[in-house]
Structure formats: structure tokens, C-alpha cells
Image 1 (cartoon, rainbow, N blue to C red):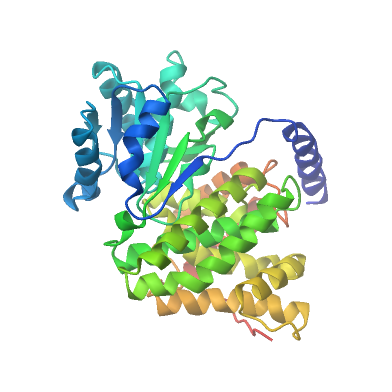
Image 2: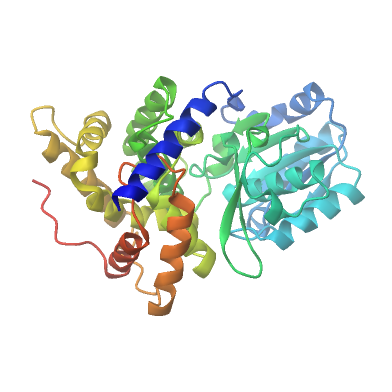
Length: 410
């Protein structure tokens, strides 16, 4: 275990040094209720004439996509539509989007939805500039390295942060393994944060996606290297905003002020983990999503506090800072007490929003495979506070199936 940790830390340190001079950037935000009306001018600024709108069937049925279509129609802008993106988008879906883009003679992307729509569109954008490479050949770090078509991301959930990340998570159709294409060129040109589009989001999805954003903020803040002053500040600001607003929008989806705050928090958390990284929570979540199709935000919500408890003393100091910032622990408490109160606050918020405490559907025969995938994803690049080997991942996954261990907040 010592040699594994040492090797991972050396790789992470070298990667951090190499990452410093890279051209990191954020998506340009267009914010506020009704901001989708600015899409025509954004397309004009990119000199794009015919975008491909990428979304999912649920948003078409809910009438959200028609709002964007109406804006394009009024401006006289032609477009093509692909609306069959599934949760945890597959390689097959990415390839279909590529076909529609080419046949429609499109020159830009407008991705509407949660992470699935944006990830699928990013995967297609990557394939279009690397036509001789399959999706599987593009997975990993910096394998695209070419400027993609102009990309406008319109999140309808406050969770994934995909509107400002370098990643596209795609599920292998045959193995069901979820992997990421990661490259700086995949950061969208614009992120349109329009609270009106998320106003009708069901409470359960609001809760899960909000906890997804919180996981991004927490994991990025806990990373031991490659973070920056800006990414750490964004993580703290996002965590504070989420604790202040998530339950407001869970109870009252029409609260546009709180919805807008959540969209901005998700954006900040997305930038933070893009710059600083994620960790063992996401490694397990991706394995779970690939095997069972578990929604990403829901999986993060359930797994996050279990992993934080397992980290123990290694994360107390940073969790204490998050606890103070989020307003869940008084300054007079000890560092350990603040850290445990923060974890307990996550459990309590999950419970109030109807999020389960465990995933008892995980099968015995799948745990080894999940642990293998998680360890392979996390090591050696994820700058986690504690490096885990496959056996440790297996123990934690078994805990995820059982639920919370015996825990005293202070």
C-alpha cells in the first residue's frame, strides 16, 4: 500500500507541474431568467449558421426544448435536432449524433439538458475533429487536442457542471464501463444559465442534481494538489450556496432566485473540479452508473458521506472549513467536530429530500468488478486525500450497499 501511495503521489505531483502552464479557461456565462433569448447573438459571435440541438426525450416532452427552438425560429436560424440522448449516454448515441451533424451540414452545437446531453454532444464534437478515432480511442487525457465546433451549453439542472468542464462521460455499449474523454478543447464556448428552464424540474431530480454539484465542490476542495486559489474559492462558494438554496428549490421549484443561485453554484463547482480534480467518490459512482445505470447525481448523494467518513482524520481540517463556510458548524467547535457535523449535515439533507441511505441492489458478483474499475480510474491521477487500493474500494462499496456505519457526529 505504501508503494502504491508513493507512486500515485509522484505521478500527481508531476501532472500538477505539467498542468500549470496549460491554457485553462472557463465557459463564458450568460445568466438570468430569459437568457436563452441571447442564443442568436452567441451563434453570430461564433459565425455559426446551423447548429445541431442535442437533448433528451424528457426535455422535449416537457416543452423546454421548444422554447429554444422558438428563439431560433424567430431569428430565422436553421437547425437540426437530435433528441434521443439517454441517461449515461453510450458510444452508440455519440456515433448517431455525429451522423446527424454531418448529414445536416451543421457547424455548431447547442446542448440542452443535464450532463448526459452535454457529454454526448461533447463526445460527438470530439469525434468530428478526430474522425479516424473511435470514442474508445479518445477516452483519457488530452487525446483530442483540436478545436471543436462552437459549443453552447444550456443546463436545465443545477448539478453536473458539464457546461464548464473538460470531460465527456460516455458508457461503453458492450462492457457497460463508463469512461471519460478529457481535453481542454471540450470546455463549451458559452454556458447559458437560465433559471426559467429549471423551474419545472421535479423535486427528486432537483435534489439529486444539487447533491451532484455539492459532491463536485467537496471533492475538488479535498484534492491535495493541482487546485488553485480560484478553484478552492469557487468550491467554498458553491458549497455555501448549495446549503443555502438546495432545499429551497426542492420545496418550491418556482423560486427563480434560488434556482439561479443553484445554477451558478453548479457552474462554480464544475469549474473547481475541472481545475482541481475529483476523487474516490466519483470513481465508485462511475462504476455504479456503468453497471446499473444509476443516475449520476443520486449516486453521488448516497456515496459522498460514506466515503468522507472513511477518509477519517485525513480530511478533517478541510471538512471543518467547508462546515464553517456552509454554516453547519460554529467556529467554537473543534476541527474534528466541525468535520463530523459537515458529514452529518449531508446525511440529514439527503434524508429530508428523500434520498436513500444505501444501494442494496448492488450484487455480490459485481463488487469485485466495480472495485477494479474504481481503482483503475482513481489511481494514479486522481489527487485524492487518501489513496485506496482495490481491496479498500471493495470494502467501501460493500458499505455503500449496507448504508451508513455507526457514526457519532461529536
